[in-house]
Image 1 (cartoon, rainbow, N blue to C red):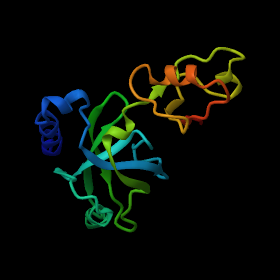
Image 2 (cartoon, rainbow, N blue to C red):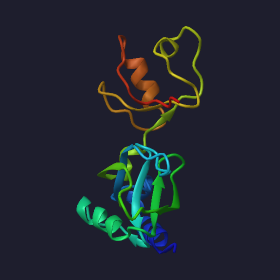
Image 3 (spheres, rainbow, N blue to C red):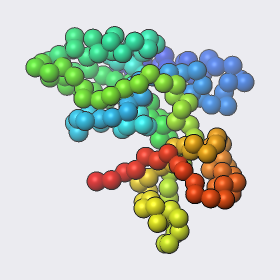
Length: 176
């Protein structure tokens, strides 16, 4: 049952010391881009499918993944899911309908490291540029910027200080 998770963790543990700055370097999975099915507990941008039915996904061909889902019509599948929020791995069990064997999600093969530098908005000062832009504390995330690299703990602060004009950010907004 947890074989896929154990193999994933062993891949991370086997990384050379130089690569252990990030536990996700060189590890890939299917990143969830959109989720049109409210019954599938996968969160766009933050969740990566790294295993299916006890096997690690190591082939970027989406048709193999889709075939595995279709072949499971009328049964339950298990997905190994890596969440960029907290760098956690969980097992998700989903019933695949016999009449329409799909998950209702859009996926993209991507390195898990694309989600490492994410900033959760915790506070928005009234009348600040963040407030004027409509950002919500504890719900919105900064995931990057076309203005430059946003890496490390101080990356976002350094970018804000360097840019003396309007700052463009890539965001994940949580709205009801």
